[in-house]
Image 1: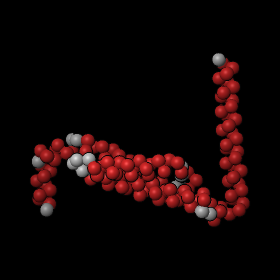
Image 2: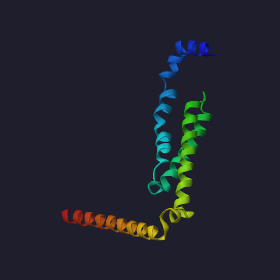
Image 3: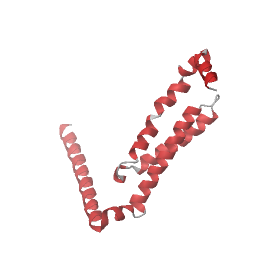
Image 4: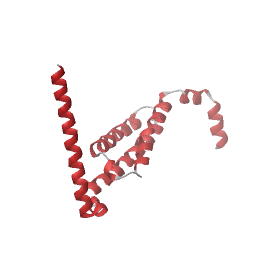
Length: 141
């Protein structure tokens, strides 16, 4: 088996594969699932629900593409299957934290109140900065 693989590596067909987009496209794409797997260690507050949903849907679409294209691109399929799995895990963590009581269990009632106050303050500061930018733009125009 190993000698067959070594012989294939020496063949023109292997060089053709390694210098094609069938190889380099998926290799470049592996950054997405690797980042998602690394993010599993991070706090749930940094997970974006809409982005996680979009990335899971994107990977499901391209998983189908990798399977349907001829010749089949197994490396691309594996990349998107891994990313879909990682994004679904992240999505489950997001839903558990924000909608299934995970935040309350982790922070307690006082922590939830403090986090809600901080989120409201951040939102108000962002709105004030946006308004100040609009006023400055209108004054300069």
